[in-house]
Amino acid sequence: MSGTVRWGVLATGGIAATFTADLLAMKDSGAEVVAVGSRSEASAKVFADRFGIERAYGSWAELVADDDIDVVYVATPHSAHREAAGLALEAGKHVLCEKAFTLNAREARELVALAREHGVFLMEAMWTYCNPLIRRMTELVRDGAIGEIRTVQADFGFLGTFGAEHRLRDPALGGGALLDLGVYPVAFAQLLLGEPDRVQADALLSPEGVDLNTGMLLGWESGATALLSCSIVGDLPTTASVTGTAGRIDFPQGFFHPERFVLHRPGREPEEITTGPGPEGLTGMQFEAAEVMRAVRAGETESPLVPLDGSLAVMRTLDAVRERVGVRYPADDLV
Image (cartoon, rainbow, N blue to C red; front, top):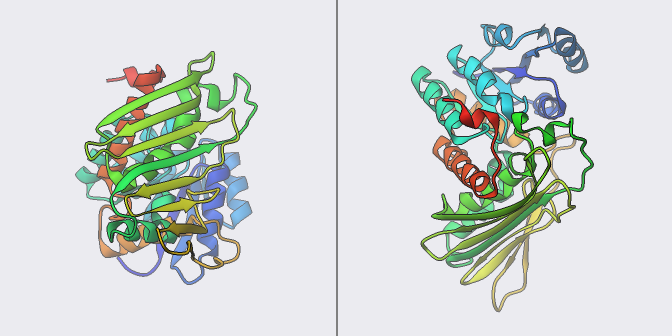
């Protein structure tokens, strides 16, 4: 296909609003938001009025049945990704699905199988991978700018006060720090090193059995290691570093959507690399949206920037971490 790419937004929460605002601000991109769907018609109408969207549906099924939609953006909590994205894929729609991709690797495999069965595009909304600075960093690493990677360090955490009724405390909703925040450090490490050969982890668990504070040590046969952490009870710096045999790359706060990084090499002055000021009013989600539209227009069924096998590998690591720390979701027991 070419020209306009027509989007349907599935869910009406904060992340859906941020993504929709970015889409609408992408001037001359060919993006058009034609419909929004929610389990509540009232919520869908409020969202549609807010963003000037023509159609509002009170069910996911109605949204994915709309023939005018090319791509469905799934913005539900990750506990509903399997159901929501599955509906869209079965309806023959291309899908951009928020991260964490699913609750577990089994659900992720099912979505990938559905996409491949129906010959439609599917991508996890790992906006970090589409960020120009992250892409520049991977180019530098691939070209040997810091030598062979020895260590990766990354963390993501904030200090929050969540009652037992909050979704972040509910195992059925995939609560805890790992799927909301820990997915970023894990994905960052695996972007550079691939799936680890060894996974160690420890965590502080809530009374409900979700992880509040988690530390991970990943290892590869090359000898590389990754020290990663996530928390919803501690304000972590949210930084990342990649150290190799010939240098180091440091990302300041907000490594998962960076505006700059610093390249350190022996005998040279530190080199700060930036993208310059971004378009006003955009948060960074425009990069993943642009990649989806590029791929869909090209007739591709997955993105080389966010390959499905990579998303599956990250989910396997998250499963392994949960196994080590003793976190189980009700969905894990489903066959």
